[in-house]
Structure formats: structure tokens, C-alpha cells
Amino acid sequence: MKYKDDYLYTNSLDYDHLYIVDQEGKNYSVAGGHYYYEMNLYGDDIYYTSGAPGWIWKFSIENKTNKIIVMDLASNLIVSNNRMFYIRSRDNDWGKLYSCNLNGKDRRLLAENVGNFCVDHGMIFYCDSENNNSLTCMQVNGEEKRKINSSYARDINATDRFLVYFDHNREDKMFRLDLEDETEECISANACWNLNLSDGWVYYRNQTEHGNLYRIHCESGEEQKIADGNIVDINVIGNNVYFRRVIVAEDGHPVGYYKFDLENWEEEEWLIEEWRRGNS
Picture 1: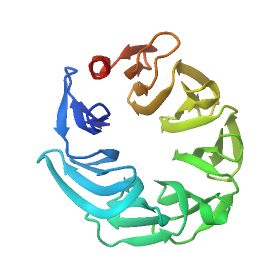
Picture 2: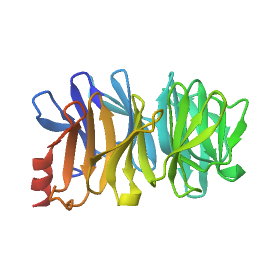
Picture 3: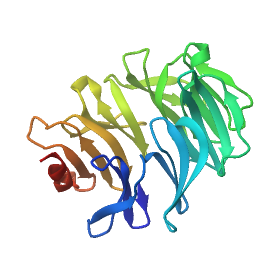
Picture 4: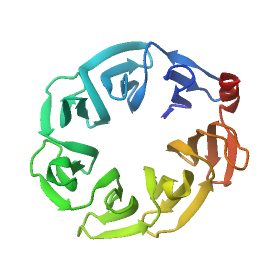
């Protein structure tokens, strides 16, 4: 994620501790002690889980201090409009969707059994596991719940007009839902995982092709291949797509982090030397 002119990331070679990359390309540790997952930047603070799932912590970038906010196993952490939203993820008590304030107080139970969700338009869109995994919506306070359709929606993303998701009941194909009339359209017949929506484009792992990186425009349907390989951790910042190859690609690209320049349509290595040192 971008913070001012620098970039923050979780370093998988150093126990998933928090690292920063400055403008000169130098990277160094910011904080250790435990894992840094599902990070949300809010002002000068990072809200994150210390595991997958894990407790919710707040890290002050300016003061370099850590504080436990919620002592409960949480996943799918989202910070929006001075509230945190998360799924309680204990083995014997999984799926409850909660919200609380940024100090972990004023906790509210919003839904009993949620698969995954997103927060947008003052609404929560989620997979309702109590209702055959149907796509459902409600207000952020938990009121006015209603079923939208029967899609088993995963990786739900929202634009001003559309929801975009893949449907686990329909071979993980990607669908677009018009929020005005709630009509649905298939926009990619590929198995689409790890969806990340930015500026009208959906970036995704093409599971039909065993992990190649693609993008598709959610309105026009234009689809473009970006990179080959077994690709995860897709992040889009401005005109750059950052991602990680987890195995050596057929074209010889090694394991590591990469950056793809969308303006010049060029790929370059990013932190690759760090990976080579760690795997030598």
C-alpha cells in the first residue's frame, strides 16, 4: 500500500513483518514482532490482523507504536468511515460479522453467518451463508437486510454503479451486477480469483490458465493479459500493478515481487534481489 511517497508491504521472507520501500527503492523493516495481514491504512495508522485470522492491532507509522484493538480472531478486516468491520473466525464460532469503532469499542453484531463482504455506498454487500450463500446487502448498521440474488459471490468489489465478483456456483466466472436495476451479466468466462478493482478495471488471477495475471474492464468487457506465471498478492497503485510470482514462470521469470507499468505496458523486477538472497 502507498503511504505518502513510500510503499508499505508485508515481507514474507522476514516472518511477514512490516517493511517500507522509499522513493530511492531502498527497503527496510518498520515493525516486527508478529504478522501484518489485511492491512488498512487510515490516516497515519495501519489497522491489521496479527494472523490469518488474528487479533486486530493498530500501528502508528509516526510513533512506531503497536496497540491491540480487538482481542478476538478476525478476518476480512475493512476500515471505513471511522468503523472497523470484520468476521469473527474462531473454529467453534466462525462467520459472525461485527463492526466496532476505531478503539475496538461499541461492538455490534450485524449478521450471523457471512462468507465474505465489502463495504461501499453506505452498504455492506456480503455472501450470506445462512441463505444458501446468496448475495445479500444491508445498511452498515445492520438494518434493512435483503437478498439480491442467488450468486455465491466471492471477492466482492464495488464501483459507483456496479458490483463485481466471481460466482463459486458457476465455475468461478466473473459477473457484474448493475446496482440500479440489479441485472447481472457474465463478463469473463475464465475462473477468476483474487479480484482487485481499480479505476474501472478488474485485475485478477486467471485460474483457468493456472495463475496468469489479467485485467478486464467492468463496463466495456475489454480483457487484457498482463503477465504469465503463478501470480498472487495483486495490488494496484496509480499506473502500476504490483504482484508476486510464487514459482518460476515458464518464460524464466524467477520467484519474487514485480511491478507492471500500465502506461508503458512494461514489467520490471521489484525487490527481486531480496527474494534471491532469501532463497539462495
